[in-house]
Length: 298
Image (cartoon, rainbow, N blue to C red):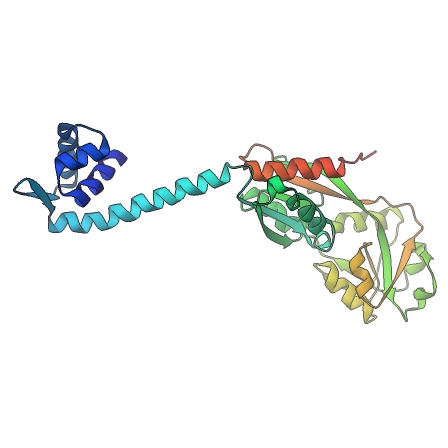
């Protein structure tokens, strides 16, 4: 059985005439007759019965036609979907990003990209989570691109640095440390911290910062994302180290510059090295890298 036989069968079921179907299909009548004969032989049933110069579907033929139509319609939809995927000026980009990138960076990049007339028909589907969440989505190919922290142990993923985030300390506005604008982290050891969990790309940055200063923070609680952290800090549940984001202005917290020498947090554009990427996703990748001029890690 092959696709041509199914197309021939469907057309003959519509015309009920071998000569007319052969003309419509631009094949000879013997070719059509042979194809239908082979199909019937393979299925083990008679699909058509002759009535004068025409043919009519048998009970088996009517039953089979229902499924053939559905199958061919689905194949047509699949072809249309592929055509959309390979069109660099349309389609949908599956973009994943970590929580801290959802407030400003990603919306800004998407807006600037979509404002270009040539990319106006491209749509985005967004996925948000921790670095572990979004790298998992890359690996199972449920997203095209991810904006996240670097994740060790993934040689199949390409990570290109695109953005730097300054880390700051936040406290509630009535916290004893709120009287300062700048802080040495050694001054914070008496106060409990709210920390990111191990799924967060920020976890190794903050862990290594404490290790480099030989500090052992008291832990009030562990959270997954930045808004929960800022909310808990605002009610004086603890203090926290967090990227300096515009979002913090909406919370009742004090932002303190950290005076210790700690590395800036690097944000990466990540994608699978050896996986097909649609032209639309590839266009956004190139746009993002050109806009942000991949930064040096020196």
